[in-house]
Length: 306
Ligand SMILES: [Zn+2]
Image (cartoon, rainbow, N blue to C red; front, side, top):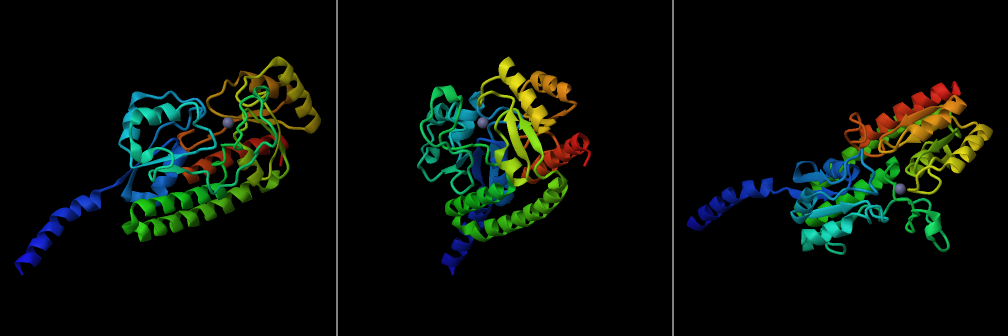
């Protein structure tokens, strides 16, 4: 009897701390943090390192990042070398064995997604910042978002097996809202199937393929190489020839060149959010598409008259 009471007391005292024990999740981008919140709910405390309005290739590693990574139970990365320029030193400085690549607390979110632009043959410096593991901007496609959420669900379940049912239910709910979103986004983009479009950087191949647009050129002559006069001139001629009028630009690029190009064509520059937090309306993963699709559809309507 006494034993039972003691046990009950122990459980009673222990229970609140167990209930409040949130997994500390650090994600390199706001998209990943948003998906971790969708699936993890109040069982996780998720924070992001890079802000959605920053270029994810070049992030200033702040001291607070080291602290966050040092305390993390789980680190989620985009992978495909996106964070190659800034994450490895952070990981070393964090001295957190739990979240090093290969450890249980390290998750590469790209393992089950559809990756485009995987180069064949040898990669040379002359090609610019080409990613040998394919285009790392894969999160900009709802099907990939679903796969990423599934990967995160499985990892959270591995780290916290008692919450398996909770994560499964949260994932199912997210999946349902994402499917409803896809119907909205497909309907909004349907009139513009096959429309030629230009983007500043190669951030949008998954997005444009999913919504039926044809990317015919880039403001950057090569990935991560700033615009040059000769490339810009070629691009203007090609846009005229193919009838492209809209240029999609990420919020961290200078608008001068894209604006000069569209001025010659009577077109439009559209700044879209390449990540959650890239615009204040894009506060989570589903809102990111609601925002981008609404902006893009409006620009295409104006440019094409459809
Ligand atoms: Zn890139």
